[in-house]
Image (tube, rainbow, N blue to C red; front, side):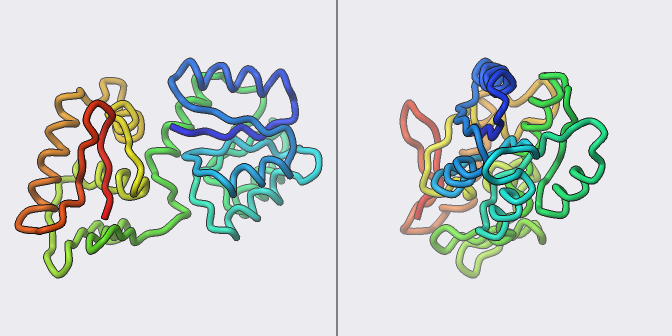
Length: 222
């Protein structure tokens, strides 16, 4: 998972970065609102951890600008414990969740995982790759004029792949972003779900969309 930390307190930023790296995530750090906004709009992140009190541009303004520019990443706002107005303003600006300082690292990681599983609720509801269409609001999938019936887990995996359309995702990334509960998904079960998706989506078509990149992972690409 790709995570952007926008935090001007260097010690807090270092602690967050260390915890995320230990959890297997890729991280970038910005120390003020302006550089955070520039990074968030020039690269694809799954989650942005955004402090409210930032130099240059405050976190509320950064959040609002990101949503106006249709950045789909989940946004977790960091607020002062008693700053109810900041929490309300952040949610109104488009944040998906908030966490009051000081916080436990385990809770931060859990909230980041939850945001990533949503796949960017504030983003596009209808995803398209080639003639494959996924409507997350209606929970429908079509390939051309053909309706495709998927199990809930198949749907989640396909949505994650399509939101990362054209990019290879590893089995570990699929597990991190799709698994529910501590047990997660086994690597074999992920391979099996991909097999089912390929049979349902690419059956009787000249253009396969569900692709395997050997030794790396999977992708949906037209």
